Amino acid sequence: VCVCDVCGVRVVYVCVLCVCDVGLPLTPCSASPVLQELCRQRMATRPPDRPEGPHTSRISSVSSQFSDGPMPSPSARSSASSWSEEPVQSNMDISTGHMILSYMEDHLKNKNRLEKEWEALCAYQAEPNSSLVAQKEENVPKNRSLAVLTYDHSRVLLKAENSHSHSDYINASPIMDHDPRNPAYIATQGPLPATVADFWQMVWESGCVVIVMLTPLTENGVRQCYHYWPDEGSNLYHIYEVNLVSEHIWCEDFLVRSFYLKNLQTNETRTVTQFHFLSWYDRGVPSSSRSLLDFRRKVNKCYRGRSCPIIVHCSDGAGRSGTYVLIDMVLNKMAKGAKEIDIAATLEHLRDQRPGMVQTKEQFEFALTAVAEEVNAILKALPQ
Ligand SMILES: *[C@@H]1O[C@H](CO)[C@@H](O)[C@H](O)[C@H]1NC(C)=O
Ligand SMILES: *[C@@H]1O[C@H](CO)[C@@H](O)[C@H](O)[C@H]1NC(C)=O
Ligand SMILES: CC(=O)N[C@H]1CO[C@H](CO)[C@@H](O)[C@@H]1O
Image (cartoon, rainbow, N blue to C red; front, top):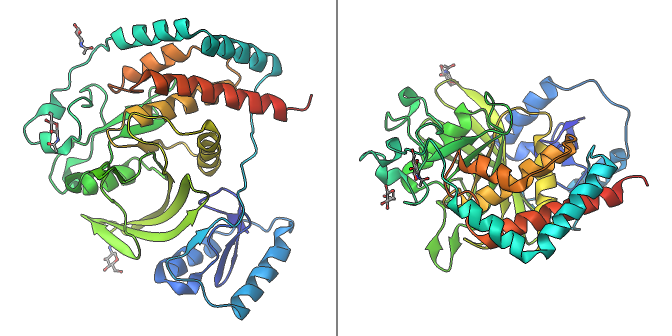
């Protein structure tokens, strides 16, 4: 019994079966060499057996499903048979929760206050704010948007010797929360055809295991992001081989893909999980905060216990990415027991590190609403 890379829940590897008890891909490991290798690695590093849980019955039902029914396709596409929402979890203090909630409610009711706060945020000037490296001639084709260039003092540096273009530049910004040594996130633009190898190099070098993608590939015929992963099998991006292991559709708003990443220079490997939110459009907000909040809980469940940055991208890596990071950062602070939360100050802190984080007043308002809703859900779930 191991822990699933995708959902953080128990996974049962029964020699030829990879079964997850939250309904993740039920793929026979014998279906592909990649899965076989993964399975072998897992079996070799198996933790001591835990007491058998309710999943035992699941194995037998799944095994019989496999022996009787047709084999699932090797690409391991699956869809959720039933929508299951992640339960809220937090160590938030009840009185702090209520205080924050009433503050948020006042904030949302008082449109004038929201308007003023947004105006002040729009006038905010980051300092230092030079982005000379991003504007170097050789780096210009690597930027998607003129408005979102990395600051010189806050950009992800690739190892030039491992880069296909011998350059350290990528349009990506490390985003710190409180610990200046370890960024909690990397906010980056959706890869361009010319930067896809740089993107995977950054995934590799940052130790990343979770990618949060917040944009569809195309909107009204306009490309938002390059299709930077293989639709099936594997693709090679410079020295980074990416295998699609599974793709699991949770609901109409998001899906989860699992990749097996191999560095061909060193033969080292890693599993990377990509959470792809499909229904959030450029400069807009998701139609409801409920599915985004559930999405966030699933991301964090998968990430739990890691210390690497989460890579967050949309198209320019600032509007939707900034909104997601703002919500996540604020809620994480609350879960850690922070008594005072200043969302506008948190956003300024983000804008010190990457320009354009949260693009519109609607996105800022959405962040406030989403935080209030999650706090509400946490309070409801607490034992009264
Ligand atoms: C950048 O910083 C300078 C001060 O060093 C300031 O005058 C300028 O307005 C800032 N620009 C932006 C876009 O924040
Ligand atoms: C990586 O694996 C290949 C094939 O198994 C082998 O030829 C090569 O020497 C290995 N490289 C390293 C650095 O271990
Ligand atoms: C692909 C490309 O060249 N994109 C942009 C990179 O950034 C510059 C500004 O420095 C834009 O003008 C380019 O369009």
